[in-house]
Length: 155
Image (cartoon, rainbow, N blue to C red; front, side):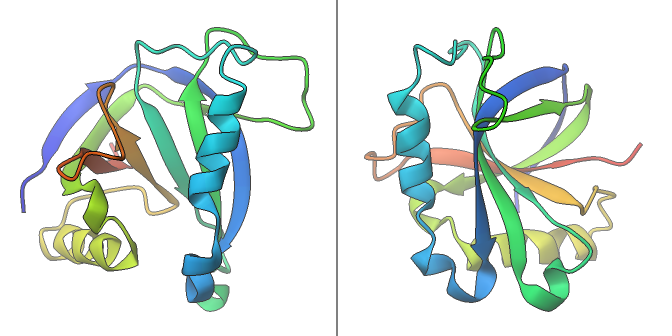
């Protein structure tokens, strides 16, 4: 499996949050969450010079319940005053590792393959969250669209 280790600066994101259950992930409207986010692109001051991310944040009960928080996030040049509706996330400057994935293959099975590879190859990642990194030229309609599954490395 191919991967790349790289450094990222601190980036501020704005987005929307959805609670997802792995046991019924096909019922989750993650695509709709992204659509809702981009309907408000101008109001949110989205910075198109950096990539969008889908952040999957796990809690202590995720392994037992299958429930985690999914965030559709776009980089923003400034935050909005609407504190209650939007989620704000800052990714720290750090080293990250990313694995290329064809967008059409994205799903729980692909994440399981990547997690298995990480464990087998002793890549020291932060398991409290993972991300989908969408390149600037990403087009979900493209059959060959490539994106990345990304993790923060533990220093």
